[in-house]
Amino acid sequence: HKRLGILTSGGDCPGLNAVIRAVVSHAIMTYDWEVLGIPYATKGLLERKAIPLSRHGLDLRGIDPLLNMGGTILGSINKGDTLDRIDEIIASYQYLELDALIGIGGDGSLAILNKLQIAGNWQFIAIPKTIDNDVALTDRVVGFDTAVNTIVDSLNRLTFTAASHDRIMIVEVMGRSAGHLALHSGIAGGADVILIPEIPYSIQGICEHLKELRDNWGRRFAILIVAEGVKIADDSSMYRSSQIPNCGIGQYIADEIRNCSHNELDIRVSVLGHIQRGGIPTALDRLVASAFGKAAVDLIAAGESGKMVAWRNGQVEAVSLDAVLAESPLYVAANSYLVDTARALGIYVGNTE
Ligand code: F6P
Image 1: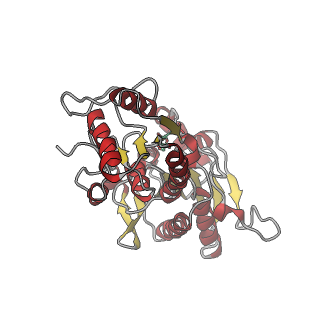
Image 2 (image 1 turned 90 degrees about the vertical axis):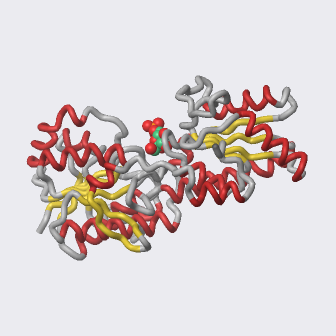
Image 3 (image 1 turned 120 degrees about the vertical axis):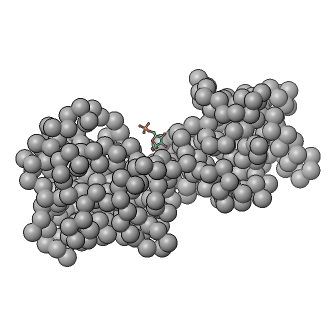
C-alpha cells in the first residue's frame, strides 16, 4: 500500500485533469493505493494541504468530467519562493506521510521539483506538460497539441476576414523563448510569415516577402504569426537583438511594416494571450495524458525515482530527469525539418544567413 501525492505546477494547460484522472484511476484500481491531490503545487505542500482523490470524486450521475475539462482541479502556481523554503517543504512532505509524488510540470517547475526530491530523498516521477513544447527528450508533452489547434482555429477565422479586406493580419502567440507553438501552428494554419525567437529576421525581408506575394502570386492579404519572445529587429547586423518593444512584438512588427510600406498596407494585430491555454483538450492530448499518467504510476510501483515519462518513437519510456533538465528548454533548431518545410512552402521564417 502506498500514499501517493500528485500536484500540477507552472502555467496550466489543457490535459492536466486527464493526467490526474489517469493517475488516480490506475493507482486506485490496479494497485489499491491512496491518492492525495496537493493544491497549488509547492504552496499546498508548504501549507500541508492534501485532498483525498477518489476515482469517482467528481462523479456527476456517472459522468467523469476530468477527461475533457481544461485547467487543473488542483490549482497551480507559476512563481514561488519555494527554493528558499526547502526544509519547510521537506518537513511538510513528511507530515503528510507521502510515500511517493507525481509532479506534472514544464521545465521551470520540474527543475524546482527535482531539487526538492533530491534534497528530501523522495520517490518522485515527473510528467511533462507545456504549451511551449520545450521539454527535451520527449516527442510529446501534455497541452501542446490543444494550444496548436486553438491557434489554427484562430488563423482559420482571421484568414477570411483578412481576405475580405485585403489586410495584413498579425497574430501574436505565446512562446517566450521557444518558437515551437508559432512554427507548428503557422504551418498548419497557412501563415505567410512565421517569426520565432530562435531565428533572426529583418523588417525589409518581411516587406519584400509581402510584396512578392502580392505581385507574383496575387495574394492581397497575408497572415503573420509572431511568437511573443521575438525581439526588435536588428537589420544592420542581422544578429538577434535583445531589445523587447514596449508596445508588444505584434504591434511593433505592425508599425515597422506600415512604415516600410509607406502606409500602403492595412494592418491589424490580434494578441491571442491566455486563450491559448484554455479549452477542451484534443484527442491527442488526452491520449498522451492517459498514457503518461499510467506510466508514472507503474514507475512508482516499480520503485523508480528521479525519472520523467517521455513519448519516444511511439512508446512511453522513462528518461532521467537530470538529463531532461540539462537539455531544456528545447529550442527550435534553425535547420530543423519543420523550418525547412515552412520555407519550402513559401513561408518567410526569418533570414537564412
Ligand atoms: O510557459 C507557458 C506560458 O503560457 C508561456 O508561453 C507564456 O509566456 C507564459 O506561460 C505566460 O505566463 P503567465 O500565465 O504567468 O502570464
